[in-house]
Image 1: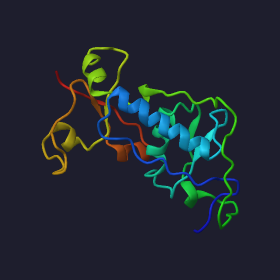
Image 2: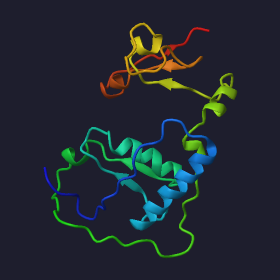
Image 3: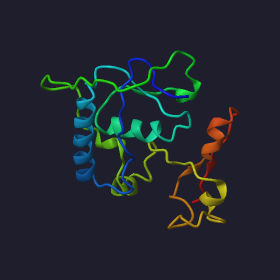
Image 4: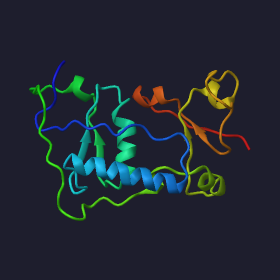
Length: 176
């Protein structure tokens, strides 16, 4: 399937950095907000992200848009592969936001820092969901690329693949 959904704009926001402190997150949020404004995005619209359909492009981009302060970010289920309407081809003319004060204000809470997480492990209002496989979560047979095995204390486990299977799943609660 070639082309793009009529009225859509090309936008690449990248992926979140692996380890950001709050200062780095604020600087990144500012850069992402500038990119969004260059594409005519103000923060007053509903921002729907479209990728191939696997979520690999839209999910990190959604987190980046939330970091930049966009209050209404969504992902088109099924992506471009699931789109049944017509497609357009060719270049898209962008209309940057020129007005002062678009409604984007950095939201560093979109990326919790390691320090924040460490201080909140006993906080009942915090839920940590580890979406790796059960073997990676328990540290039995983790991926060779994982620098550490096991899980963050108190984290629950739900393999990311089970999110897409459509059946209810119970969370495995970490042992103290």
